[in-house]
Image (cartoon, rainbow, N blue to C red; front, side, top):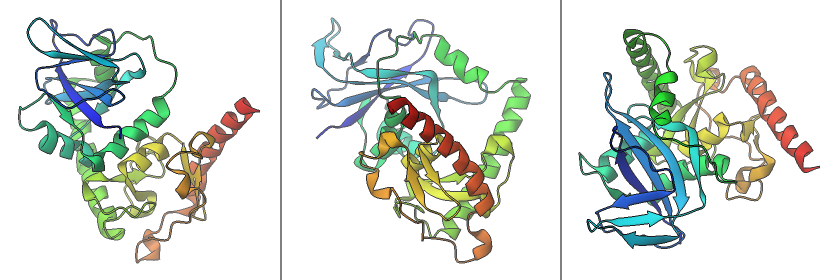
Amino acid sequence: MTQHFVQYHKLSENNPVPDTFTAKTSNPVPVKTGDVMWLLTGKASASGSQYAFVYWFKVEGTSQTADGATRLVGSQGKRFAPAWAVSVREMPWFATLFQKVLGSGAFGCRPVPAELVPALEAQMAESEGPNSSLAIGDDVTASVEAAEPGTEDERQLRAVLTRRGQQRFRDQLLQAYGRRCAISESRVEQLLEAAHIVPHAEGSDYRVSNGLLLRADLHTLFDLHLLGIDGSLRVHLHPSLRHSEYARYQGKRIESLPASSAEWPSPSNLQSRFARYIAKAELAEMACA
């Protein structure tokens, strides 16, 4: 059975991201050929540490370095461009990974608990394919900083307001949906996230009717338009996922709804969002024709 591992890499001028798929650790771990390694970077900033996954790869072999550490290597994987920024405050699954797996300062190579793997696998579903040849290095930092234009004060204020609104939004959705995912009905609270139907970037609508409580991996697929929900609350999967482990959700109608119909997902918002899913799905089907 394939296991997932996270290796922490502290970015600095003298410690850039490796140019090849590799992870160096002095912490002995039972990694085997075929397991998946994720490289997580961390960088200090005025607003706190910034974390991002820069690549994942399938382990093909190991070697010992001169200082006694173990080097894990592979050739199949994916570099994220830009880096996949993650947040302890805004992503409950990552908060759990950070606090319980990586520990307080006890960074190194660690196995990912099975209940947190879906969040990583959803990201793999979009990225898996031919290896990227993009160099990362300093571009990782640049991509994180470029994501939020404006002065440092403006960025911090924007981050504070977003965190406050998002936390309240999630709390309201947790209560409305009985603390279970609307699609999978999972009750692992650390994996449940507040998904906007009309994206947050297009307007700060924090009404419960503009949200869905989704497991982290399903939230990612929804945001990537690889999973669509029509106005009648029926789930649709992108053609690339119809033979995956998500196939069981194809055609499922969401029935785990809030007690108050006023808090049910807005049909007009769903249909507007669903149109984007349809556009992406049709492009995929045309490409395969």
